Image (tube, rainbow, N blue to C red):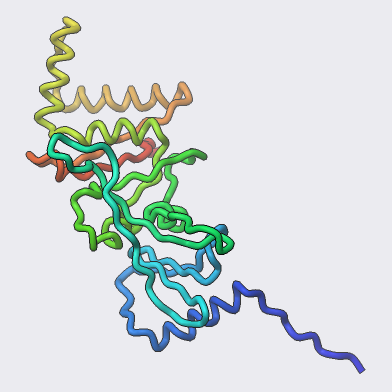
Length: 234
């Protein structure tokens, strides 16, 4: 008489089952477009992350939302205030010490889109993290406010986002003046043709055209910035 084999469940599957079961009675209202996925290695199997900036845990069978720690980072300005801030989680490694896990890092690793296809990327905040309050880590680090960018593109975008359009225009005019370069006037049609030619030339030479987008404001601190690879429609 043959014996029927029982399907063996893994710890990962068990945690997922516990999470789904407890979410049915957990006092949590899903937001529009919200997605929650089980964290992949090297993060704990009992962690579940939401693209809206929340990290859940079902460790020891109890479902709860983990609170991120906050800290100010970066160099100090003339007023003695650090110029950056971030949020992070702590996770014990083999019971020996706590490892700091940046909130934007774990979020981007599960929901970040790498439009440029680069293997080495940095996490960029579209709206600057300093514009958020210490208790707004989940809003600052939700997936829609993050981009994965190659290092050089991130550096260039940060430069654009550090000055207003008026300041950048003034800086460009000064560079043109110092270089003693001729200045030309173009009609919108001529300018469009020139931009298209440059894009085609970049692609023909194996280069990736990039579009840098910043919001227009008189306050540089309020600038929102994005960068995307540019492709011509066929």
